[in-house]
Length: 212
Image 1: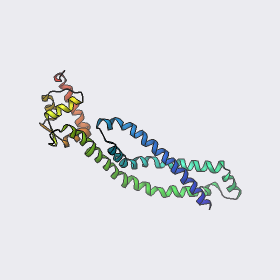
Image 2: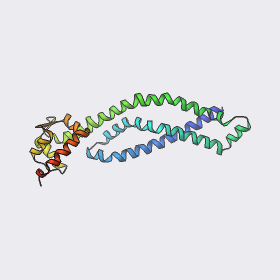
Image 3: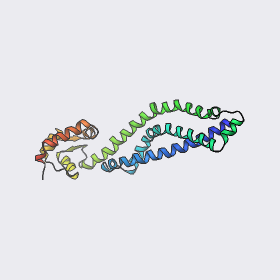
Image 4: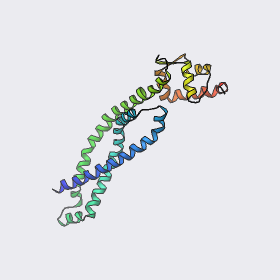
């Protein structure tokens, strides 16, 4: 009966701590990404799907802290209620009373390993897929007015001008070294630091040719 009681208390506190910490992490993560969602005009459903794939990663960060908090709260509860003192009176040491907590934590190790090595990589791949194949593609399609799956020079110029960057066609051609700008190239420049830096370098050299 004693092991079940201690284990029950520990699980109760650990689950509450997990819920609170996960909610806090989730809220902070959403606030940090609000500008990104606005920039790429993500829909509510896309945000929900993105975080459906992201929650395992956030959970992996929270689980160790939840177990630690659960252990501390369980020990504190037993001490405050005088239960630890009662157990000692009956000849039950504190280490034996808290043994169910140790068993549960040890049992979590292979599950935590599985989460980090199997679930999270798949969830991360799904998250990247949503970001690249849905959210980024949506902003691309907004400017692909002819539905050709490629932005011609006029569409690229319109993309820049709507983002308050006024460039002439020759500068745009120099930046992307092609007459048509495919979705694949668009994704590459959004997700590649190298391509973004190349864009900035060319823009700096050609700044005198920027209109107005």
